[in-house]
Image 1 (cartoon, one colour):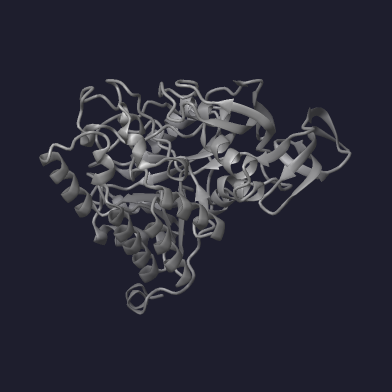
Image 2 (cartoon, rainbow, N blue to C red):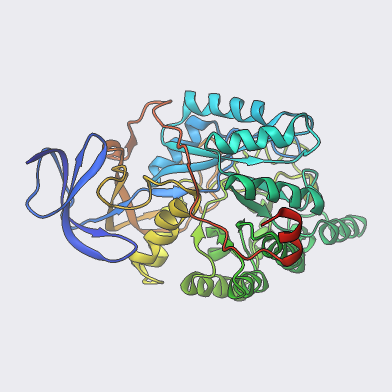
Length: 475
């Protein structure tokens, strides 16, 4: 049999193992894995590692922040950057603001992505106004339409109350959706921030102090208890501390349906990066922490307490249109938070996990592709299995690259990893069997990305809500 395309002679790497094989593609799907396969087109992967396309489930794209600051990236620029870094599927946000109907929010973001996206995409719905018109009905309808994840904040000016969180969790439970939470205690952050400002500590380095590590710990533990009470699956975003990882481990040990992620900037950066004269470039929330936290996060990935590494791509230019919109000497609380990360997530993690042997190539595939696809319900993504979409990345494991000051393909204008050297490079990227990156260039057309309808998620209830919840909900 002759297939449309064969990726020949590479070392195929999955979350379960690695082996030498050819991969055959027909009509955009993986149709066979074996040896001696014949194709109308052949990509020679000799001496290369062949892995599934990256799945980045935490990206802010073409989004207005709670501070009223617009992201630097459009769907076109962000997903071009994703593709160049070996990521073929993203989950971005459809962000509700005060008074907006959720169905209108989703329709707006869907239209923008359909025009611009170069890779496949889905959305988390950010719910920030539960009093908006027809909120509960709209949320249920959007879940049924395949948008099966909701994001909530416990802090900042888009936070929702504990009671509202429980209401949203209840809707999600009834419709089979996953609730994702930015979990930090608002009172601890606000109290600390205000006193730093009064004391004249307004430099970027004070941002780390303004987010006490216990703010993460308290909110993570609270969300775990809410998940436990309702038996509602919860994903805890960007865990950054020893104690946060321990809280997740303890909850999972009790049988609570919680999952959690971390990000490269928590694995590789420390809070001292904010001491730089342009420290605002590296400001993100939660902030980077300390060496002991990095070790704990790696251990949590090793043990499976953390299941996913996402980018938390939050792109703002370092100029008057972005982070410096309030002036070059703006105090830390008026500098937009976030780092560009879509393009660097995969090479950074490959370098650490594969090239330097930290956890190995199978775990790399698991935490950056297979686990996020499974948890979020991207049923055709994240694995090199017959029947899955032929999203394939051919890695040159020997190629080294040193990042420059502004060498990414997004619209941010700076690279927070300037000067960092990585070994291992995504030289060829296929999306649904089509080569979208080769020879250092992206060949995909804007709007060629597909919306990913999610019929269900892999994060399911365990069937053990609290007695009081069972009485109220009738479970």
